[in-house]
Length: 496
Ligand code: BES
Ligand code: MN
Ligand code: ZN
Image 1: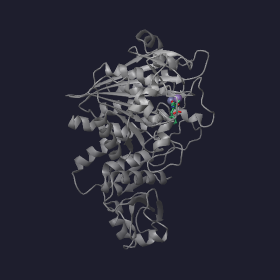
Image 2: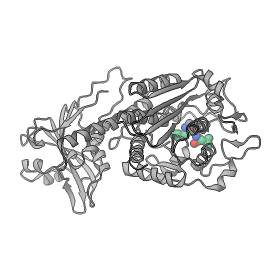
Image 3: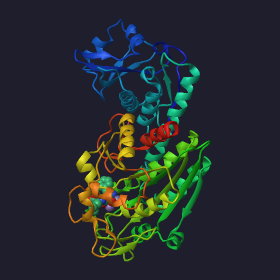
Image 4: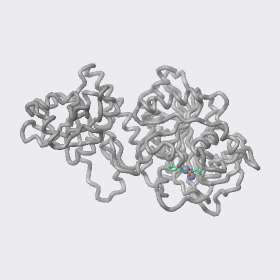
């Protein structure tokens, strides 16, 4: 898809020769009100904008879009009023991002729009507009070309033009990274399989000067990656392990990123029910986010060293598939008894985490669509964040601040014994359903090197939107948690 071009408005937005003007509304105790930035548009309507929008049913609630024909009051034919929601303590960045996204989705056949939401928060308006305008139509034979070509951004009062242009550039890069992750997730599993995923990831990384190494099945066997080989063995599309190294200028911290890259998860011999199995095309969302984040870090020249370790495999049942009852020897030597081949993510991640820790990182961040239990516990919009206490809380705070959402979850010691195995060092599942997200986190902990601060993000629900579009999130891949990772990396670059 081609993204609209975003640039600072050169004339006051209310005077702009555009097709539509986006303004914000808020929901107050007293009812509907205009968000800051809409004053000139209101003046063009003789100060009656709230009254008219109210008569049209506007309430200012989040995700509300009300379109108003201007009938000559402005050069633009339409005013698009986007609800920001409650704003008693001021409008948040995420409110601006969501309203900008909802507006972009509602602009329909509009070619050239202007927005005043950018005067409230420029970065959020850019991100929300680009993400809301996103569509994935590569597999439609008759998809119309996207119409929205250009959006003029009203500048905030504070800051210089130069600063604003830098903000637009950085926000565009972040939105592009989210889009990259979404594209990977939305590509169907017959086209995105381990070898093709590795190839696409390598091409993106090399284009920005990131060093790439791809281990194929032979190299994996030679090095002893028993988890990746066990899980990937059932597919004719053999597994891969991608390593990407970004060496930033004056890097003082080294960050290891690990992402689950199951390009399709049938469950294997412990096969999943047919209903909704197609959603398992998204089981590589963690890998997609990691690849996109490294490329973004290189584009934005973060002063960090970042090494991504991305295991890619297709979990299929076949005569060559691993079985319940198998014992796998993982990279590094630990043995795991497989009691359920559908708990495959933790097996490929165990290998990857051990490999990642060999680089002696200052922090390790691992991202995966790991458990249905995450969705049961926290729903579709809140990732579960586990790991070492302090770093876990730091990541969770950042996930909240970006608006992507995430909540710190414990790793209860008493669950650990339920992973003990009759045969091997560890089994890959407990014998019960309780605390499934946390048990998976405890399994991963066994493979993290002593003393490395680490975080595990279970994004099973939030990475893929099976419901209606909302805010800047359409159907399908959401691109989470790229913005959280970007903010975390920026935070580490600034504060260590
Ligand atoms: N990929 C799934 C987890 C998942 C579920 C992701 C729903 C996205 C949406 C994972 O590999 C899986 O199958 N997990 C099992 C673990 C169980 C066998 C312990 C699950 O959650 O049922
Ligand atoms: Mn599975
Ligand atoms: Zn899976």
